[in-house]
Image (cartoon, rainbow, N blue to C red; front, top):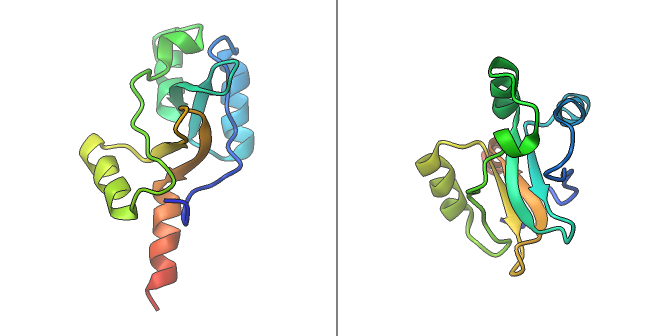
Length: 121
């Protein structure tokens, strides 16, 4: 996983404003935003899909829309294990955590595709 993950991860806090989070996603061109507590530990994730639901159902807080049961991987896990998790859960991004549940990276389907393209020549 460490070979394909993005290390500079943008995160948000559970109490952050939905509009600010949506702005961050749009400005940065990302679809997954891990939600961390004051110690940097993963407590949830918000995706662009979650923001669409927030608009449709008039939700006001991140806590109302964030996924709290987050599928994660660690840096030393094999890429095929990661790919299987993503397929099994039908998700397109997975936070990479350390042993203390702190976010150290993220892997998206786009990251995996870039890695595969690099292998196929």
